Amino acid sequence: MSPISAPASPATSSMAPQTPTKRLFNYSAGPGQMPEEVLKQIQDEVWNCRNSGVGILEHSHRGPVFDRILAEAEQDCRDVGNIPANYRVLFMTGGSTSQNFMVPMNLLPSNRSGSADYYNTGYWANQSMEHARIFGTIHECASSRPDNYTYIPRPEQVRHSNAPGYVHYTSNNTIFGTQFHRIPTPPNGTPLACDMCSDIFSRPFDVTKFGLIYASAQKNLGPAGISLVIVRDDLVERGNKDIPGMLQYRTFAAAESRPNTPPVFCIYAMGLMFKWIKKSGGTSYFEKYNAEKSKIVYDLLDRSTFYKPHARPDSRSFMNITFRCPTPQLDDQFCTEAAKHGLDCLKGHRAAGGIRASFYNAMPRAGAEALVSFMSEFERTRG
Ligand SMILES: Cc1ncc(COP(=O)(O)O)c(C=O)c1O
Image 1 (cartoon, rainbow, N blue to C red):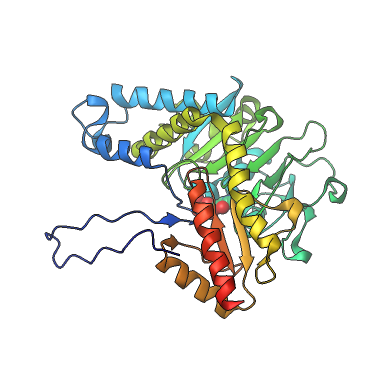
Image 2 (cartoon, rainbow, N blue to C red):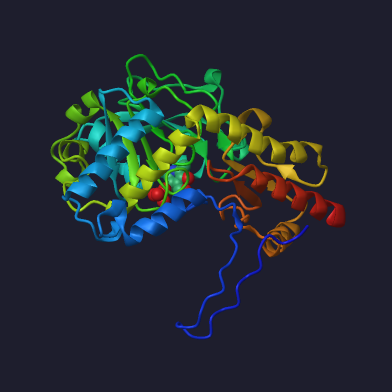
């Protein structure tokens, strides 16, 4: 096990020259690792964006350079997701957390007489339900809570309520490391809403099966501070009008996502991520690549008598791999020693404990190989 980078010695004064550092493998669940070529382009364009003589941080959100950046970001997003014309592509702020209340606020009747069905598959699904309860009756149509969220409920375990306003699920459970491998079927004609925050564009999906999809950027789509919302026209039109304008999807749809000053830099960076996904081979390419990368780690977990994976095999996430050592002390040692070997941010979320390695699109295969090499050595010496 050899370190992939040596930490730079801290500069003694703010003016002292900094020793350039090599980059670590960053297994953070988000903000996560971004592709090197995108970061390098951002570096250049912070100084001078598209040869305009003005950096991206300084461009007006109503100027011609940003007009083009915004139009391209939307078109590239449509290309990546094969998004039909009857869906709006919106760039919004407030993270996925704000979508947790915007979805029910817009889609349920404002007198709180409505209801919605939610899959309870983990921490974020619970967050979504908690926000939605303010706006109507929330029915858990399936739950893996009794098994500590180790699996995704099978279709025969799902019980829908009578005429829900929509059905909501979280496609990838970032904290527990489980993922839906098929899109659930809601009752006939009921819109399907999805928190796709941690696996959007990591694989192809049929947008027409959804009424609304949301995802904050900081996993597969760039820097934190922006959320992508893909929403069908009829839901935008039908949305409540007696809520503040800035909380209505129609406001963002009508104003090309800029009813006020939008996060210019984040839209620009997300646009670069769409271009990078397209150039790399699109979502089909990443589906295969992500499956290969995660298999390298899951294969070791399956062979090991030391590590214990959290998710059941049929529900395993290709994005976030969760496991434990035999004791919490060994989990801590694992993370501390891994960091010394250039493997960063492996500690599990506080709600789940253990170890979590995130493999978003930008994590190279070498990141899986380096982790497995470290894991084997750790098991050999501590097992
Ligand atoms: C699946 C999922 N949903 C929602 C969120 C919350 O996102 P945000 O912090 O952007 O509000 C996260 C954050 O990690 C997540 O993984």
